[in-house]
Length: 92
Ligand SMILES: [Zn+2]
Image 1: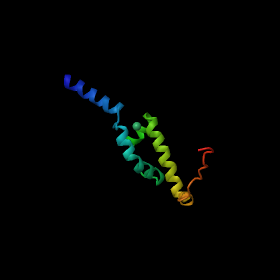
Image 2 (image 1 turned 90 degrees about the horizontal axis):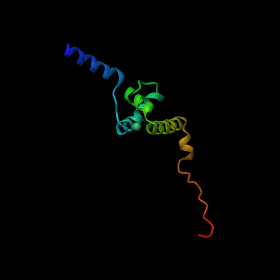
Image 3 (image 1 turned 60 degrees about the vertical axis):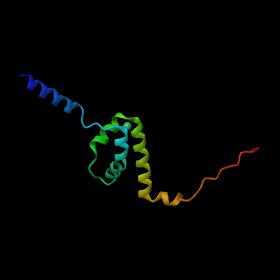
Image 4 (image 1 turned 90 degrees about the vertical axis):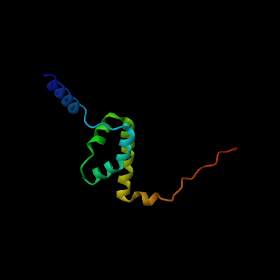
């Protein structure tokens, strides 16, 4: 009886908590995740889960996706090497 209860308990843990990864792991896997998303590949469910729980990584993900989209459109080539003009502060 006890062993059965234990197995149910374990099963419940696996059911409610899918593979959990921390921020380091998530951010390390984000570039591949974005690549896969843009190319219609298979998504990393662990990263997906983490993004739903972590606003910080979600922000990183949004940034990566934005850059990846620009790269796809070739927009980055246009702005590459172009430095923003800095206006000298008067009086300094
Ligand atoms: Zn995170």
